[in-house]
Length: 143
Image: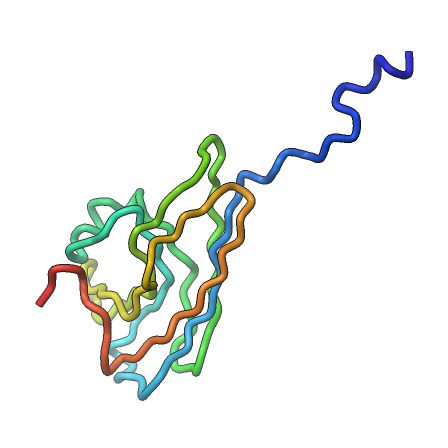
C-alpha cells in the first residue's frame, strides 16, 4: 500500500517555465532637458527593428520593463518571460528605449545590448548597459 502512493519518488520538481532578464543601466554624461526624456524602459525584441513604427506594428513580439527612473546615475530593471511550452526564445535586439516626445512614435534606442539574448525556461540573465544621451544608439539602417 505504501508503494502505491508514490508516483515519482524523489524526483525534483519540473523547472519553472519563467525566464528572467534583469540588469543595471548606468547613465554617463549630462541628462537632456526634462521635456525630452519622457520615459525610459528596457525593451527586448524578437526581431531587429528598422524604425519606431516597427515597434508599434510588432508590439506582441516585445518584452517591456516597467518605467525606469530618470535623472539618476543608474537604475535596475527586471522582466519576466513565460516560456511555457518552448525550449528557448531568442531576443535579437534589446536595450533601453527612450521616449523623447509626446507622440506615439517618439521612441528611439538609447543604448543597445551587443548580442542576442537566448533564454530557456528557468534561466536568469543578468546584463549591464551604459547609456550616454550625447551618443544615443540608432535603429539599424538609420543614418
